[in-house]
Image: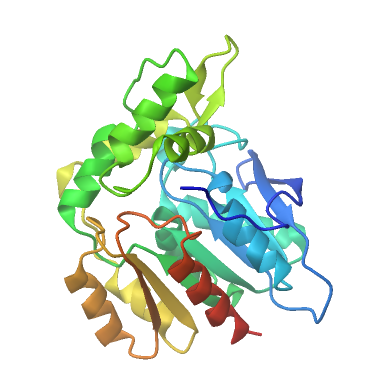
Length: 298
């Protein structure tokens, strides 16, 4: 199935900023279309992913008149790997986002967070609540289904032997087919290009530091299902919030999503049918929901 596009999808400049502990971090910086100035969007990806995930939706948001910064969290994509792997945790990531805002001259932004990016948004709200004007949370909640998190933890940091791009596409399909059952070969080829980069020997290598798994392993199985309900309540209290859920997600169950909606009755909600964890946000339902939501945010 051909992926949707936006004329703004590739219209970004490469921006770097410095973390509080001295890492050089990367973001795709999309300039807004002409028109009335609106709050920028900071888009934060999931655990093993990077800024390439936001190509379509970032372009559409920029086209609608918002500057968009799609980041590579430390240890991913073009951002530096951390010398201390124990800094691969949400509170440190949130501090990195505050540094980005300070260095980019942004006082307040809309945050779009996929999976781990949603948890970082909750952590950021606790650290600097005035910085978060609104939030789009993609397929994650203040608690998560243990089976989904265990599935992700099982492949994170796992050593893989990839010799060519066909192998990379097969790996992408192996770990993600449960989430995207309708994807075809072309979809998996494109997916592989987002999660792998070409190594020094020309072979594809995963585009993240395998040591991001170190804090997860150190915490043990008992920490796989965190309780972040107070953080979620703080985020959604008096702040425009949209929850996007994959209709067959194994991480954000219908029960958890339902409780989130009861806890935050003013929160907008979009479900993407036939998609698991996590929607790519280029699906028609996700695109429409996000752009409609943002139309109501300054």
